[in-house]
Length: 40
Image (cartoon, rainbow, N blue to C red):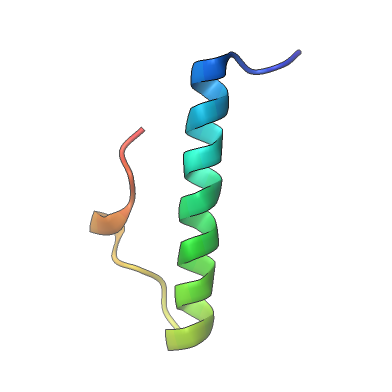
């Protein structure tokens, strides 16, 4: 099964958020506040 176009976009946005969160965690030792998380 493959995701629909809408699902693929949401997955991409979520992965982008996770990458930024991980980068912030590595730099500061803690993640970004949840208020910066995108709403899906």
